[in-house]
Image (cartoon, rainbow over all chains, first blue to last red; front, side, top):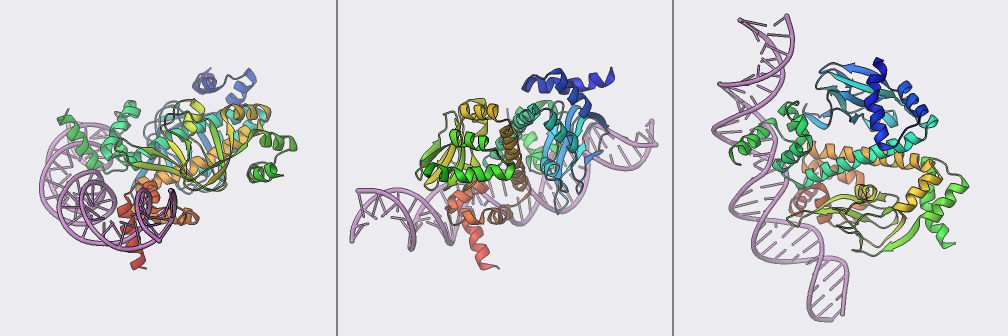
Length: 198
Length: 198
DNA sequence: ACTATTTCTTGATGCAGTTCATTGGAAAGA
DNA sequence: TCTTTCCAATGAACTGCATCAAGAAATAGT
């Protein structure tokens, strides 16, 4: 049926980390709820506590901070088969300084904080699965930080193209600039330079 | 005895996350081995696989990358009661691109990859403990990345002083500059400016 | 199809931060 | 104690990137 077809990508994802029993699959099916967000709709708004852990089935989200001057700085994009939540706010149950919204119409599977704790209690295997999951996120975040303290904007842009090629045509450049930590104007000049040179 | 007094800070640390049974304490005592590194000694060298997960009892370590131009970029300092390992290399069992060495004589408690897996099997509670531990690391790493894409060097330096005040007198400025992603010269100018102004 | 909004490009100018070179001082080693 | 190595400070020239402004092109809404 419809619900089962929607949950399948998530079951596949877990399966790749550690195989699940039928009981565990059932728990996932019970606890994760599908939800559709329309383009530009907020998934999490600054000031609210992040109460959902999101797995993206289709579409694309971004998480960002708006600074004192009103500039937005994008911490993360997330498309199909990625996770996105404000982990700090989610676990410490305190108001988020970050926003999450949809760059396209986006279907997510989400589990509430309460139900994630229940999931951990009912199936400790998920302690391990989510540990592995966040270890991977940690490693890619660390790579990105390293890039940021050691490379020029041009190098960062090229390595963004390497990692996120499938996203470059879906995301406006102004968003990419904000992810790279440069202005849209300067990104435009970089692109201009690259089409001329090689 | 000596071993028990050395392991105590680690037991205290775990205890604050989730209380341990005596059996679990015993496992920790069996699996974690104390080791002393002298100032400038490598804990992990580029090209080797990271095989130890390190908890610092006393002293200070740094993890860094040396880029193509020979510049070093510091990803992390770790002093008393912090963890430091190349998590990517440790879990994926592949050669490290990062180095770890000692800024002072440093006593660590370390568990090998093999024994950590055994620990997880013998006491699944540690799946959860290490999940929480890495969630916290993830959150602080994300804060730092946000700082880096949204703030000036001066703002980053000030927030470094806020977070690591206890380290500023232990660490040479050239190391701090490399952590902030600026040159030692420019950091010197920033400090000069700040002593004059307020 | 038309309008409004958003996104991309390009130029001129300014500043934050780098690079290179030099000096003085402090710590570490013998 | 003397030497060597490391570290901090500072000047001058340079560059990567931001800012402001304005126009062109593409997208979305009706």
